[in-house]
Structure formats: C-alpha cells, structure tokens
Image 1 (cartoon, helix red, strand yellow):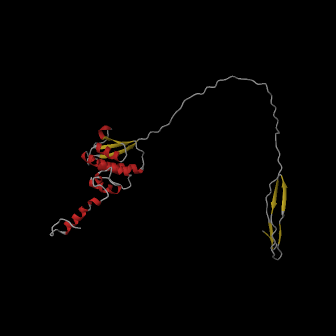
Image 2: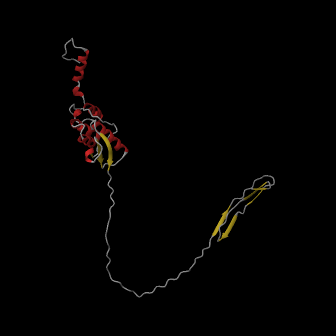
Image 3: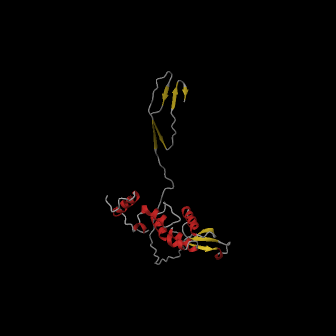
Length: 228
C-alpha cells in the first residue's frame, strides 16, 4: 500500500498509517461505539471499561448492560451519596430507597436499603455489590429490607330469587326392589402339560365353571412323588 510517509518513517508509523487507511472498511460506525444505545453487544464490555463502570456481569441482560453504561458518568459525579446508590440499583432494574441512620433511629453512619423488588438470591447479591461500589467509605450497610404485598381479595354479594309457587296435583308412584341380585360365572382355563419324567404326573382341570363365587386357582404339579 502506498502512503505519503517519508522514506525515514519507522515501522510503527507505517503500521499505524495502514491501520488508519482501512478505517472506512470497519463495518461499525465509530460514533456508535461510544453510544450505549447503539453500540454492538459484543463491544459493550469494552465500552463499560472505557467509562469506568465499577460493576459488570456478562450474565446480565442486554438492557441492563446498556443501562449501567448509560448512567455510569452521572453516577460517578455523585458517587458516595444515597442518590448514587439508588441510581445504580435503578440501572440494574431494582427500584429501591436508601434510608440513612438518622431517618430510622439506627446506629451512626449506617443505612438501610428498602425495596419492593421480588427477593431472590441473584437480586440480593446484585444489590450488595451495587451498594458496595456506589456508597461512601464511611457508611456501612445495615440491612436490605424487602417488602412484599399480599393481595387477598374479599367479595360480598347477594342473590335474589323472585317468582310464584305453584302446586300441581300429580301423584307419582315409584317402586324399587330393596335388593338386586346378580348371577355370574367365572371360567378357569389351563393347558395340560406333560413332563416325561419317571413317576411324574400332572393333574389340572382344563375348565372350571363357578356361579356366584370367587375362585382361587392353585395348580398342583406332581414330580417324582413330591408336591410343589
């Protein structure tokens, strides 16, 4: 590749010139790389690093990553204040309020975080890490309070039935037998098997017919004079 560098240019200068010459071939607009809303997902970690994002997890959803990057500069301006903690949590999708010790008669230089976000292990650890990087060094987290609202609906109502009563002089006689009897039959079938052993016999009824009863079938096999 030809360039306008003098013959005395160093290798580093020529490499830099070649890299800059291909800048137009880059498929991403350079301006988008600095825009949290337009930056390609694969480049978000580098954008977060360049903007000094203190807390980053690859497992976060894309929307959370973009929100954390977008608020990074604003959080750094007020870092160490309750508002910074609240804004960091809000970027993670956690709506919370910070109460300082004098607001709830707690120990000095302690604070609480109160939220109505659903409590889960992942949310809890994200909150701990976000609070740690956004609070000031002097203050210490007292507790995280999760609030849950249980909805138990109660209903009241009534029913009104209106109409007229009519008597129809019709007599219906119904008769039934106090007991019903059933008859049935059970059939037992078996194959006759002959084993050609000395002094061996097998006796099985090929068909058994029974009425109104239950039958337990036991085959008797006689082999060599021993009942089994």
